[in-house]
Length: 462
Image 1 (cartoon, rainbow, N blue to C red):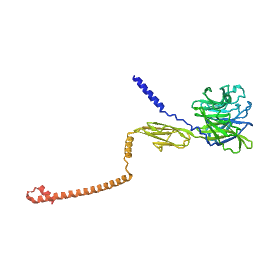
Image 2 (cartoon, helix red, strand yellow):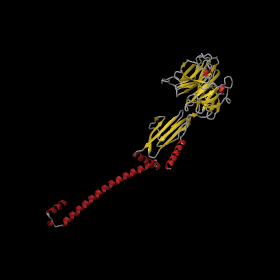
Image 3 (spheres, one colour):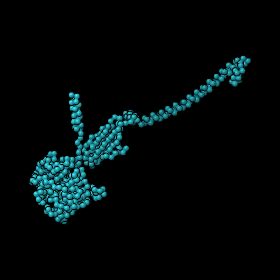
Image 4 (tube, helix red, strand yellow):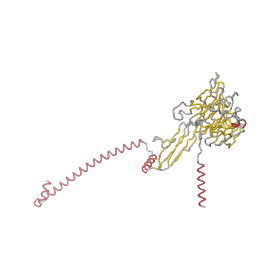
């Protein structure tokens, strides 16, 4: 019976611990995150094929990778562009961010309509959309080496439809695909082996346009461009909720074009938390054709993760991009600060021992506070420090008190000097009186009766 009670108690503790654990994640702030987004032109590149179109894009650790579909003819090799994602290359050398690093043209990727990068395997997966090279490509994806772009394998997901776009969910190690019209433009979730685990259903009817471009995924959201080319309604960006199985936003896009007579956004990828890059094909007034990369930063909730030992600290929380978050921490009784680690770096002695503020949050942050038990001297000092804090004495009063004490001290010293001098005078007078009494006593005696010693004393007294 006793064992059952203990087991039940431990179970309650475990449940309490699980219930008290916060599940805080970095994520897009809301359904309307792309509403009124400002898009910045970061690069423009001429298309190499006469009828070429930049179709898909993804981001690796070091590069933004884009495929230009030169044509749908199997004999025409497509072009793969590598743009610097950061301001340093893969070897740490300074480069111009978003500039062209290199191009590769070694095979045809069918239409090459979608791309997704898997950082766990360092692979790029390409959804083909067409199957001009044979039925073996229908419903298939190419799996490429992200460094060399060599084909590693081909995976046929279905023979019932082709695949428009593909994205990768790193947290769950899953892929999200969108089928073409043969599959009713439905979204499906695949496991790491490209097996369908869930069908999210059809989302074509409420959308702008009648077809779709590539997609990317972020948390609960699937993001893509509907095909609105030649419809005269402008460009839109869609957001779908995986959990709600519905389209939750359709926002128009203003690229702030100058001299552009036609455009077609094709793909979008996330280059850093809440920062997205889109690839847009443009036709200029002079008839020239190119593709452009545009960047935007959307409202995004970053995570501030807190932890403490031997004390208390403000809870972990989501913080909107650009906001500040103040962390307060306090030790248990008889403990003092040992270290404060912010984003893995130990703070110096100037860091407050009770709080820390993350200002203008633009990324995830962590703070870890450790306290250690006080020494005997620290405990004593802390006790008197608290006592001083509890008994508030004005500074002017303390100054006045010190002056009074100084005056009293000087007066006491003066009185002491007077007292010593007075005692010396009194002693001298007493000695004089004693000598006079002795002389008078000897004078009253008969000198003949005095002994020689006494006579000597008498003579000395005289």
